[in-house]
Image 1: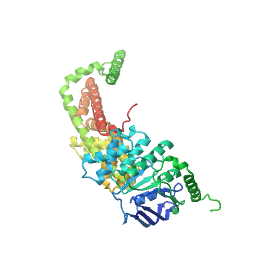
Image 2: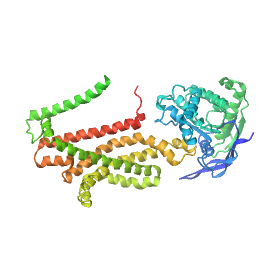
Image 3: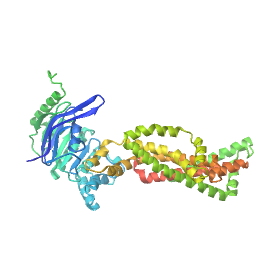
Image 4: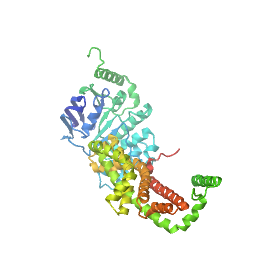
Length: 262
Length: 254
């Protein structure tokens, strides 16, 4: 299968008062079409920079980002984004929030079709009946569900998520993992998920990319060799436990805390 | 019940205030050339009823026009400051300095530059005194827009203008209306400042002035009350607009 996302030798540094701050160093990531790539790494290692590069929101100093066999130099309509902050527009209802990308991407789409599409998604994530509410009337988990709907309402090829479940409590987070899997089963998309949660990366990912400490390069790629229809219980099985262990060790190395690494 | 309370409580407060005022004058046995009492006011209003309507209208339209200009110009300056750091750094000290100048000192300056242009001068002052809060609030609202808000549209290839129209503008509305509530009162002060200080015989300010010249104290107090009423009307007009355009910012009470 062809790689839908390809990040080749990307190097990037931010200009700061104290001089250039390198965040990515010859980073390589390849995600085949329809696959789910989870990216983990120590705090501040440049993971969010990665999402902005794939979304075309910024250009790397060196290296290339390819999407669908085309080099990314500017934003494109075939990308959906979700952040840790659900970024709901408070002046719009939940339904109007979900419709927002369609207003940009498909300006000629009939309003009825937009509403149908958004309602379909809202129903899938369990928000039926809440479409007319304001974001402030919903819980954090519900807002994040709506945010997911908005990220995929225009059927993007690529969904980029930057710690979307990071601010939620543990149980709500697990509920949303389940929702995420349901959404992917219903409408396939290629996904890049930035996360700090190793269990999340194993449960949702097909591959887990471990980034090194800043400046980040690809330290390790773990193939998540678990059945496609996973339940949360699978995380307690030896195979998953072993993967989590491996990842934990890799993170420790990335943090520079592996004995003798200095 | 609740709406009745909402109307009754302020009315009761006003009645108590008038009563206290009347009592104060009565207890001290002040003549009305020292301090008019509320009971002196209805005759004064009635005697000059047509003048009050005419002058009130003069003051009202000048204030609203000045405020309208302040909204246009203030929003524009705010946008420039919100989107460009350089513009913000450059304009801020200028604006703060200008705002610090007591506007009363500008009345003779303006009156000399645009001599005889009384309507223009008054509108200009209402505008000058009231655009600052709007410019600052719009500027701050735009410059503190979280990057994620921009990114959700920018990642779809939306233009800067679309991002402004769909995200930045509506998101700044609560701050804008907060500033407008301050500005509406300021504009009103600006109008009256010119009407009182730069005599031209028009507006409630001029009516106040003529009360002073003729020693008609009840008229002067009646003008003050008329000004207060106009101020309340303007303020609540802004409040209604806020409900319509930025009502979403109000948290549902529970």
